[in-house]
Amino acid sequence: MLTSGGRALKIESPGLLTISPVKLRTLREHEVLVSVRYVGICGSDVKLFSGRYEGPHVYPLVPGHEWVGEIIAKGAGVQKFSVGERVTGECSIYCGQCQFCREINEDLCTSVKKHGISANGFAADYVIVNQSSLHSLKDCEISDESACLIEPAAVVMKGIDKATAHMDPHDVLILGAGTLGILATMIIKSKPNAKVMIVDINETRLQIARELGADQVVAMDMKLMPAHVGRGSFDLVVETSGFSDVGEVINHTVKPGGSVLFFSQPKVSFSTDLFVSKMVNIFGNIGGTGKFREAIELLDSKGSEIVRLITNVIELGEFPQIYSQDESVVTRGCKTILKVK
Image 1 (cartoon, rainbow, N blue to C red):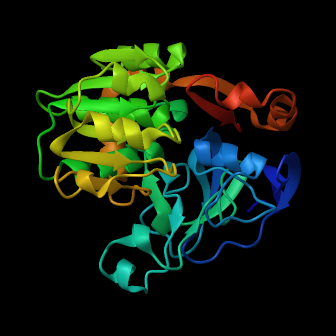
Image 2 (spheres, one colour):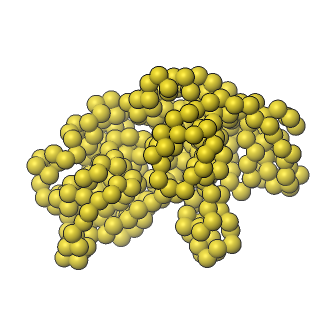
Image 3 (cartoon, one colour):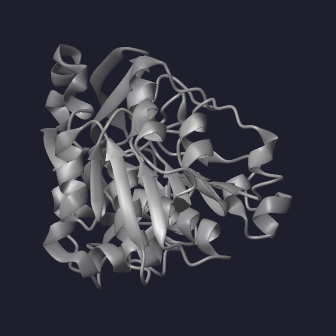
């Protein structure tokens, strides 16, 4: 087994990113050593870079929870995976003991840790990870680059399943055309008769959304939406933008009896009339546990078209300098990924 752990991207403190050497410990019985190939940068990472992330987190930190790699060594107790196998994995590390874990609702685990947020992640040459977190990619043809979209796709799929369990949405409004918004477009368009309008101010993202299935793309500031869309027009409104005044947009656009699904966490205000008189259902989702295999199958079925979401590839070792010179490099396109190998 390797004794040198190679390099890792590290957030030493808000605003200070470095490439640092890593030491590897000995593998435990149920762990594998992964040689990481690519790792995605998501909105949580961007907030961690700058110190704006409000959930539980630690510094210094190796970020990265959207990843793909190859197993190069394994512990004696690892039976399900083989050396040389391509894998990805879960963001969350669950305790397995609390009430939520026992009820198979692990995303609410009271002692959860998250790779790349409250525990070191995968923006590194080599990472040791428990086999329980892994998902095999040996039977699919998805590219390494596109495999970085599996974790966010699982998150979106789980949220949409919750929000549509009681309904068959026909008219859907998606707020924000970033990675989550475009993945939501693809997943909703796989449902019969669904029509999707997606709103953003970023023309590049909207063009990708159109190519990947959106029926209508609207280049508009969110706060102008109520003046341009009929009241109560949408069965389902999906919020991915983080726009601070999104409450007014939702109040105006969602149908009575409709649903709202949050993937972002803006601070919003609602009238209780939305829930009582209009009987609107509100859902949120943060994890993808239980949906990874479906997400893998969906992205694999899309072939090369899914790679359109990836608009920027940066070498791991070059990232701190590039980001320090231009922080917008990770936000002006759609998905940025780091090439590790």
